[in-house]
Image 1 (cartoon, rainbow, N blue to C red):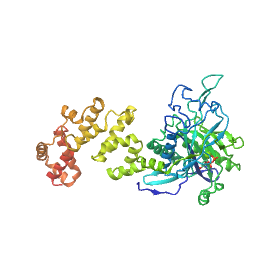
Image 2 (cartoon, helix red, strand yellow):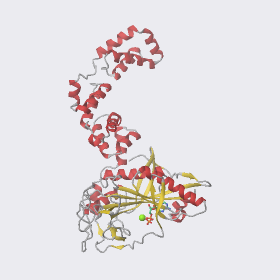
Image 3 (cartoon, rainbow, N blue to C red):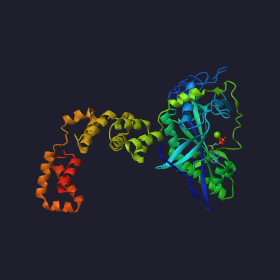
Image 4 (tube, rainbow, N blue to C red):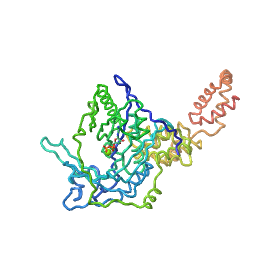
Length: 503
Ligand code: ADP
Ligand code: MG
């Protein structure tokens, strides 16, 4: 496991006109379950389908239709819970959350208020190398998504697309353990990374497949410690909930302006109303959506159409046994087995595709070398072309083969850069391409030695200087490389220079 030091919460301090204030943030994240079918119907979940084409009678709430739970969605929720080191509840139950909205034909959302499938867990967020914060997860429950109302297609009419209606969501609720905008973004990023590794949510924020309700409050220094000691929320300030945020950048900006808004009210002697607000990125402000008084009374009650959900310990154990390696474990392994730096390991584990690519290249090779090639050359080139690792024209086998040629001294690093470029544009087997293009490092030490001896003989003053200041020996290496047309291996030349000059 990663070698981590857990840090006490470091709240972001915001100075108001009169006092200093601390931020307190808790998040409710809606993550769309990766599943081909919906939570209670067999309708497809494909994104971008023709409006209202993925709607079964159950989703459309036709009279007499009954929901049937999708076992795979339950498995995905359990897997997510295990990934967050959470308690799995063998018995959970579904409730109806009643409200009217045109994109909700049932007139209620089936959710899990009283008995969620997943209980307490945690997300470990690294704020600096080796320095971590623990954000407690309160629960994960399964629920249905609603459809989409479209108001901007016609001047006089609104439209409803029910494709999303009934798609499974996991609502992942954190405790108010997040203490600043950067931490909030880091939390979302880490949670997203874990879910993507697990394959339980694709994390596509643009499509709304992962969106956050961000609860923000402010308190005077010292108050949070009292909350921590007692878990009594009355020590904290009144929160406002910023709804449906799906951009890391906007989450951070919204938290900051919302905190400042609350501070201004409090310093003015006012009180913060608990309400739901929307962030407007164009004006960088939050606006009230509905206040507590206007809040819906959802009249939750157990859904009579569904039996309590009972799952077996053995089934959970089976899912546990098939858990993939998670980001922290992978990062720790990359650092331990391949000697990667914290930074390189972070970069290479950020996305599973990239981590798998690295694993394949590094296996049986110098991991550091593999990391350098992937991060500097491959990622650099992919970025330039706007491609992701999934579209890389240079495969792990090709890159690995090329690194082997360098390791065996058959090509120099400089040649390898040219070879990489050819593999990128034309493809081919690295050894064959190198041979066909006459890329061959001078390994004949005789030729190198001859060039060096000639140089030493012709430049006695340089020899004296290098003997006094070893750094100047680099001049000889440079000259030999030049004399051999860049084909000599710099490491070999360096060693020979040092030996000949007696350094
Ligand atoms: P509700 O039932 O109204 O949704 P919850 O108790 O479920 O309220 O809390 C919702 C979210 O708000 C949780 O993520 C929780 O951590 C967070 N939260 C609760 N109190 C505060 C507070 N004072 N400041 C910031 N976040 C809070
Ligand atoms: Mg809630």
